[in-house]
Image (cartoon, rainbow, N blue to C red; front, top):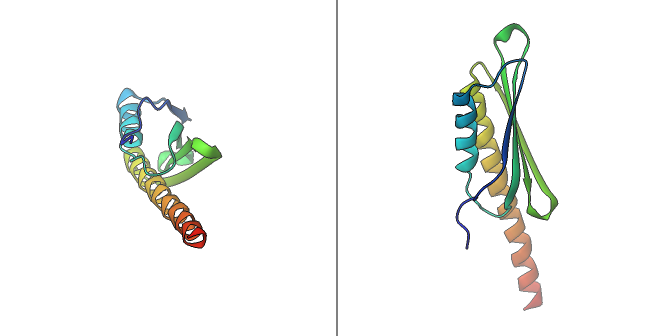
Length: 114
């Protein structure tokens, strides 16, 4: 059984500001830390945006997973690193929730068959 996402292509795009290498590495590190619960990640896309007046940083993470599953999470804070962290926590919670729902459905079908 695979315990980590191996060689996941991760795109980090910035809107209205240039992405530094430190920000890119932080985003990639957060995506690499996501555990492989149920949906196997095929591709990850991180969109970072500096909104008007320069005091709101927006981060959005989009995961394209196996079996046509797409998970999205976004966060807005005053710090770009905090936005990335918050969005990564939200997407991890969505993955756990999806796995729990999937397993509950699977177990219900197993009980009916027995």
